[in-house]
Amino acid sequence: MKYHLFGLAAFLSLSVSAQRPELSQRNFSSPAVEKCIETVSARITQPKVREMFAQCFPNTLDTTVRYRKTSDGDDDTFVITGDIPAMWLRDSSAQVWPYLRLVSKDPKLARLIRGVLRRQFRSLLIDPYANAFMESPDSMSTNWTGDITEMKKGVFERKYELDSPCYPIRLAYGYWKATGDKTVFDKLWVDCIREVLTTLHAQQRMDGTSPYLFMRRTHAMHDTQSNSGYGHPGKPCGLIASSFRPSDDCTVFPYNIPGNFFAVSCLRKAATILRDVNKEWALADSCQALAEQVQAALKQYAVVKTADFGEIYAFEVDGFGSHLLMDDANIPSLLSLPYIADVSVDDPIYQNTRRFVWSKSNPYFFSGKAGEGIGGPHEGIGYIWPMSDIMLAMTSTNSTEIKAALQRLISTDAGTNFIHEAYRQEDASKFTRTWFAWANTLFGELVLHLIDNNQLELLNSLQ
Image (cartoon, rainbow, N blue to C red; front, side, top):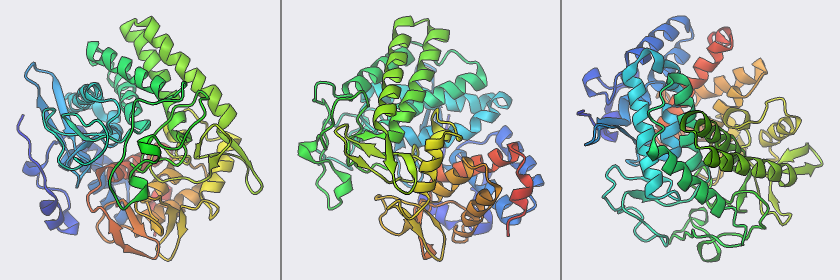
């Protein structure tokens, strides 16, 4: 299939009132998505919310997906993040996730998402430690040639992040439940899960060693790892180490707690598919056993007692007793646990954690004239990520809190009707990443989530 690459220059040239490209220039058009936009927009009377939803929700399909067939007729979809022409396992999964609700009404959309999965499975078999990949599996990245790690053909960047191999499993499970399609779970899938399982076992570092290391010559401390690329030592305890976070920033302590919660959820999903579809009993049992081992370790090592908030989840630990209390806006985060993992919103430790992360006790919580929210080292002090407001609203049962988050979201777009990566706490016109499809599509998902939960009146009451 022929596709268009909708470039950044073209994206920026569009007027605010017509940020979507012309139909002929869209990378992919889904009748089901267009119908959803039409139906939802007719119900939203708040003009700013209506405009932002209509532009943000289809942004991934309009500008970032590239669907075609492989030489053997398989579906293949490459998904860029927006202004970075590479495919992140995390971002690509999250970007198409909100469209799963519509695949039963659009077979072409289902095949597009199936193509994302097939591309992800093949990518993980190239290198399960990589976070981002090139469009051509025969290409060598020219961006990070100086990185001290084992770069392979097809890899754009090789930062090992625990969430990266987990996100495709979440998407695969969601796709299966939405379509009933079992054809995606063939030998490629089984081989991929074997490789992922081997990687996660290795990153438990039970013998104190790791086959993975990473160093980068950089001015940014968070862009490389210490101790000759192996990072801070971790006591073998059953948790899975992660050299980098979902933000692509390095971990301080090796066991990222949100990532481990996410891994438990995804390993359980993989086990279910392997049993019900593949009849791969032994491999399913191995996934389930690792999930239970990590879950037990989380109960023992993830909880920290604080004076102001009671028992809360740490962001990172080392197993020796050291812990890092903070949160980062990128998902999985502590705030996002009920959205991304098997943590109940009613979990008292989560509720304590929630109060902590949305307070000045979290070193990466910022508040100013423009808004308030969580940021992270990736963009630095004073930059708020709207993604944190989306997660605050997505995981909240408090209408006042949801309304405040929504109000901030629609007032910090700098007049673009899009969600940005981050903005200055004092001035939302100073923002990063004009074209960031994950955040855009996630905003669309939030709007649909609120309507599903009878919050349309709340949406329409915004100023």
